[in-house]
Image (cartoon, rainbow, N blue to C red; front, top):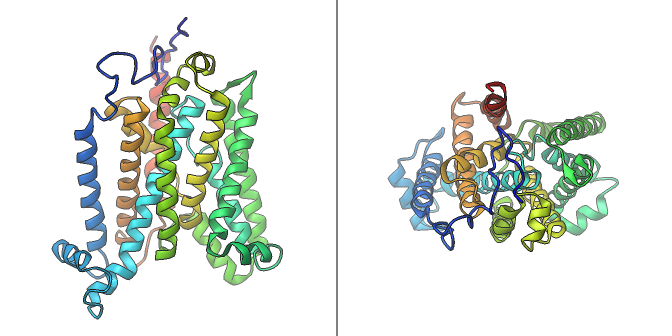
Length: 371
């Protein structure tokens, strides 16, 4: 029996999306033209982001430098700017944006609510707390772990923090086996407040040098991008997206409800654990190298859903592309809008994302209030 459709819900009930009609069956890439257009737009944004800055470089010159490789014309000033400064930053913004968007898609599928977002429900704050704890306590209490993990210390700490926050919100939001959206958002507010208080305590304990590093986490920025960060971020985020694509058919079934998904053969508990792990990893890696950057995980999935519909086989890759493009474009604006200074990226995404969130809330209430 189909569950009743509630007015204002973004997900329609019925057969799992992507399998409800023959025209969708076996055609997960039916909207390949949209993906190709998104890839071309993303490439143009990336080239523009590499070209624009304090030292202007023509786009065709950027392409020549990239084609020449890392060792080509090493003495050229433009070559140094592209390979040592801008390209690592662009690649990190691409992977971070894609990871946040992927985390947003999975969170919204888990809670069956388009308002879920790694930042809103405290996952990003938990990841930031883990990273800040390493910065402040790594020299004293966590010295052994820092020596053991090396450059993996920050991502590992951010992952643990994001995982703990995800599990806490997921556990508190369950009522008799059902995830309540209102309770979820309230739990997210509480987790954000708790993580913020702990970060404030770490700030109180931090030295002057550590305080300068903590500003990076609180405001969000890609200014510290380098090749080691790129080498860690891209493989991990790519793996998270691949896992998300493997879970896409099960995510479609989960939108109908946990009982319906189990009737369709989905191992719901294992699926939920996988979603929590993948989301924590994606948000953890993103926060570890970029600080708290909000609303990308909310905006990108919603735009993808509007373009290709709610089938996760099509929505997730498009959301990843949109998230990568939005964050890269936002970083380009952040570092050029107030030159020679640089606007913190987290502030810019909040200024743009908060009105979108309010619009989304108003749109969800309108079908009910208009009756």
